[in-house]
Image 1 (cartoon, rainbow, N blue to C red):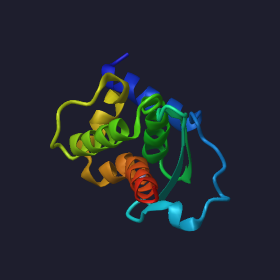
Image 2: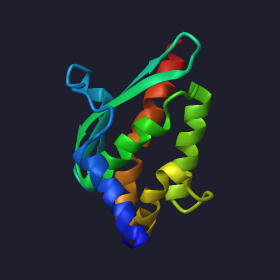
Image 3: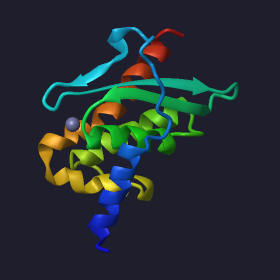
Length: 142
Ligand code: ZN
């Protein structure tokens, strides 16, 4: 099996069996972030424990395999982090997908190939933008 095929398999597995996916249709519609160029939409919801570490982040949405797989992978990747750590991880992922940053961490490496397809980068970063938007709002509400 080629390395790229393995990466593709991981993405398809996350798409078909999304981790931490939950019905968030009760959340207000402004919580949903859209990617109109592809028709993807994603919504995320954070649950922190008393020590400020992420207990779980869940997502809901509709879209292409890349947008849904990236959201699913994000929920696993961010677990256990604090808010500042999450914001840092999100920024560095988005920069990396835009070709500005360093290599992706191993857990997210399957998404690296998408950088060759600029139109799809927005698909891959949608959930991460939603996460940043949501945490930004939570911070300002405190
Ligand atoms: Zn898409």
